[in-house]
Length: 173
Image 1 (cartoon, rainbow, N blue to C red):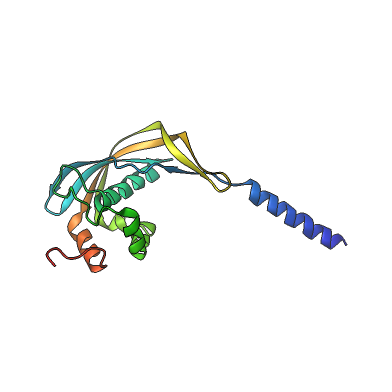
Image 2: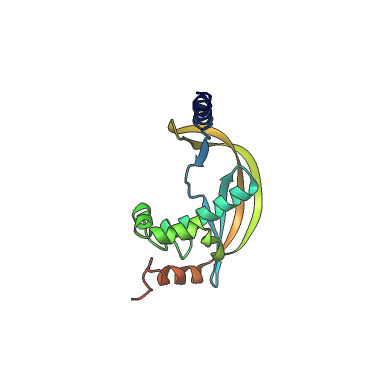
C-alpha cells in the first residue's frame, strides 16, 4: 500500500511541475528592416536590424532576416530588387522544406555570410507576439536588444547552391 501511495505522489508531483512550468517564448514580428549598402563583385552588403535578448541572438536574427529578405522580397534599390527565389514565401518553404530546414535550422546560411560588422545596439521596447503553449499568441510590448549590423552576403555561391539543390533554375535555362 505504501509503494502505491509513493508512486501516485511522485506521478502527481511530476505532472504538477511540468504543467505549471510553461515557459513563454517571444517571437518578434517578422519585418524587413534591410537596407541596401553596396553590391560589388559577388558581395552584397546590407544593413539590417535584428532583435533578441542578447547581442548574439540579435545578430543571428539580423542575419536570418537578411537571407529571408533576399530570398522572398528582394533588396530595394539594388540590382537584386526582385526576390532570389520568389514571392510566395509560405508555398516555397513548403515545397523546398528539406532545403530550408537545413539552411536555417542547421544554420547553413552562415556559410554564405563572409562578414558581419556590428554598427550599434540599444535596448528598446518593441511589439512582439508572446507564444504560450496554453494561451496561444498574444501581442505585447517586450524589452529587446535591437542591433544594426552590416552583413556581407556572398551571392554567387548562394545562387549556385540554390540552383544545385533545385530551389531555383539556372539563369537562361
